[in-house]
Length: 184
Image 1: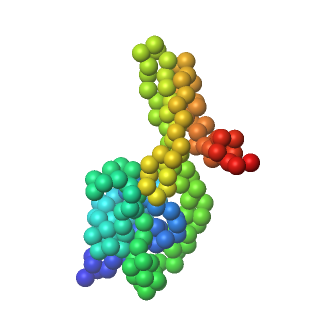
Image 2: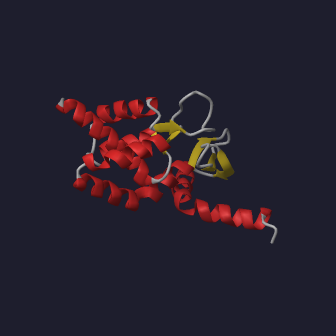
Image 3: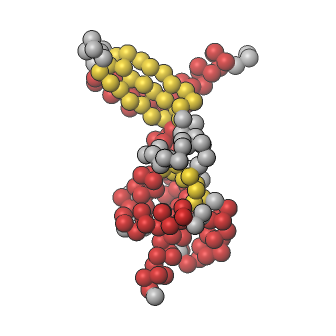
């Protein structure tokens, strides 16, 4: 009986994390948040509870994040049923754990948002240079809404540019939008 109670609390913790993060999350992100960065759940418990919450429609795959194929970029969010369940039973999560989750979400929400939406990759060209592809993914469908390709002379300059992308993506997008698309 105690194991069943633990499993229920674990599911409530997952729902609480989704609720407080207020952004769709990939499976990797939610596992990282709950197991590696914090000790709220064990890895296998987190994966199992995540799957079960999806099966009972307390969490759902965002529409438009691709076909029926589940990819690494597939994002999940809490459903109305999940929020209702959480509203009725959140008090079964220890107060201390709820406070930890709330504080963690408040401090880290934007970091996870940027890491899922502002991405880059690079590859080596035939001439020895590198091309960096910077993307801003649409939050709901995880498809690029903005993409820039930049050729660099070295791998290290590609890596440096990629690391700057997380901090500068929003400003770059705003600049391009204002200067190319805006009616002003």
